[in-house]
Image (cartoon, rainbow over all chains, first blue to last red; front, top):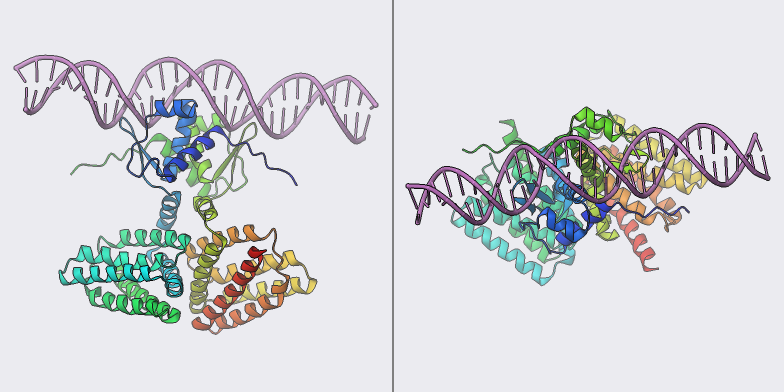
Length: 229
Length: 229
DNA sequence: CCAAAAAATTTGTAGGATGATTGGTACATC
DNA sequence: GATGTACCAATCATCCTACAAATTTTTTGG
């Protein structure tokens, strides 16, 4: 067996350290990093080396540099940026289908594993939706609706699934939010919320999956209709 | 209205161009890029700028630089590297569950959309598996088995789904391949192949999904058993 | 106090110099 | 002829200095 030469380049070492500092919340999203000169001293590397490391993270979507101003943290995960770029090359329907796959699985797992605390979280979301619906506040309804679906996925307790789902949802809604009015979906979505909640509460896998599929089918139809216009 | 400064940094422009050249197969995977000095002339930028662009793509996993040798193309998609890094922080079971979600959905879509050509592809895979099984060639069986599953997903005709599935599968098998013997799964897997094929042939969504779920459940059990040892 | 000008700060780009690693060649040795 | 050694050339890695461009802060003049 040949051992891999484990010598990483200085640039990669620095990039890794910065990534870790971001992940460990030493620098949070929105924070400004110290200027290059300070980082050079801190990491004890040349300006070129530091800049290459920073540039790698900028390209990956974790950092953003502004000439004359500084470097700020944009995201804690490189997956976000990579997925977004990749998904941009896909169609909206493809994205929707993947999201369906993830949420269906998540709903089943949520039905199996949900805790009492998960149920409480879901109830909060449902109430927020009702409230928004009563006030006819479309914006709040949408955000509460997304929150409900995310909470279902969170109850699956699978972090990878949660991360992927979050991305699919984000991309999808940034696609449609500009020209979509979800008003006709108000009553329908509310019905789904309650039924899905009950299924998860009763730990009924099959019916949870069925409700998600139903929900997605309606969303799909509505998107197809919009696309035709 | 203030127009956003649309001026991308030189580095990003160069990185984008290189990315495009890779995507357009001008430089294929395994190819060696021209040395820095030539690229500097070609793009008409400084050494620093070019190096930062290349470094960004190296970090993204598209390129690999070897001191003294050159820079070669490693991959055509940044998603690969990002997913791999992210998935490494997840557990094997989490990955398996996501893979199940994707394949189940893919099998259903395959059942709906499969063409005659898809069926032929699947039959080829099944025959390869049979052949490997008869020869007791474990390596060939595994690769044929993976090929079968990939072909099912390919029949879904959803490129995003295909890309994600490919990654999940790759990571998963790089996890287990070292210490796993799939021999006891031989007959079981073959049964699944045939049943799943029939379901897709008959365009029976539900039963296709059921077979995939069944398959994954067995795989999961077998991985759990291995992990306990 | 306010607004314009100046200065300081910070990232962007350029170019050069030296070191380290790799791949290959020539040559001596056996 | 095979093998090992010394050397050389190509290439990337790192460091350095200098200046440009954009932004922020400070100073200044009214």
